[in-house]
Length: 357
Image 1: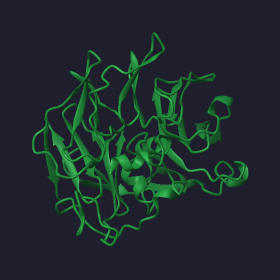
Image 2: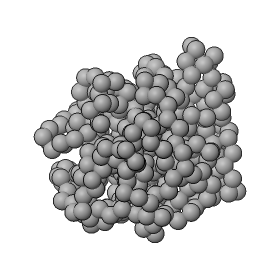
Image 3: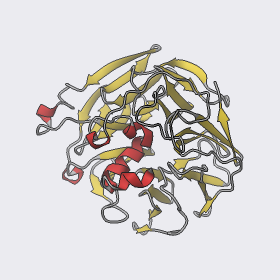
């Protein structure tokens, strides 16, 4: 399944992985090559497969489940399902509140339990006073085709440093900045009209965006860091004090903050198609980051230690379906969706288990 993505080009695959593999497969508007699917209602119970599916992939005629997505937020992992958000901080899905929109959001950034932002195909929504309200829709001048040489813009990721400062990225070189209570589009020649699927913040003023290029904003100007390898889009970033780690799907790359160069320390480590590297929330112990083979049955995980070395983690009770969208709760515990969206899995100290409703 994962090798199918490369047939559409590494650039498109990288943008999908930054958002979620299953998100793209379920009909991202600007990726019409994948076709649209209309999920029908279903729960989390079952074996992670649909009737007539193979290795968890639904057949074209099988009834589709409610589409679900996982988000890494400052409040811990959150799950979207059937128009609602669920918290996963207690180890099982617990209803948190309404979702930003009836369809899933590509990305959430919670400033606090009382305020947050989301981006999706419809634009940008703001959460306050326990209500999600749209603030920028697809026809807004920042996103409308008329303001972008005829190309409709899709926002893919959002990140906030605090209640007054945030960024959103998307297709066609789009980087939006929130400041002084307003959204505006950032303009710079280095943005080049490329598609971006990831935005990450480091400190108060350092902003990184990635997709068909990797760019860094230092608070005054943008610079192009460049791709780790030619033609390979970056599906996600992990920002650390000494380095920035990136996934290009078939490898994990390191950008050293001192030498300012990319290197590929372990070219033979990744066996499948590795998704975006994930930070360890909260106080770091011996593990600084995690990554997972996306779409490969077995729940193959990689862990980054304090010495800057990635190793393949030993897991028991491996899932028989491919997984997607790894999100970590702490150093030992994380969650992932089955590739088809039928099931939610939890890994705890190296053991995978399937969560039922």
